[in-house]
Length: 143
Image 1 (cartoon, rainbow, N blue to C red):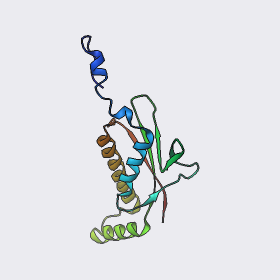
Image 2: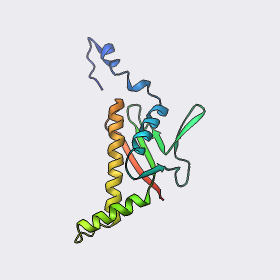
Image 3: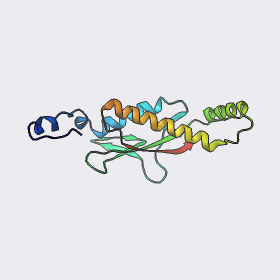
Image 4: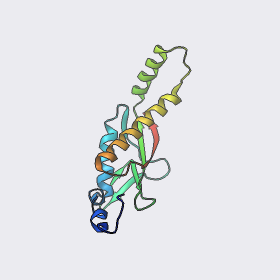
């Protein structure tokens, strides 16, 4: 958002055209590629009760749901399937390194979802989209 002043409002209002030309399909595809690179992500989830996807002309991107609550904001749902072997190994490393900790699996999964959320935020920043985007991460399955 650039401030508008009386002398050059039209020029300043047109200054950030880059994010506007990005379709939801481009944004969703970019997010999917970034999320799949996160260690422990086996696949993108399909959603638990309804198909989680972004739809475009004749195609869709599974695992990412984009919504625009207001014209200048973006909400992202990320649905992932995690690799069980990765988490068994990570849990055993945590248990072995700090036996006095009762961290269990919940904090590990929360740290993992925070990592995915950070990757999505960095991807959106790279695309020039608003940083104040809401990102929800749902773990659909662990296989």
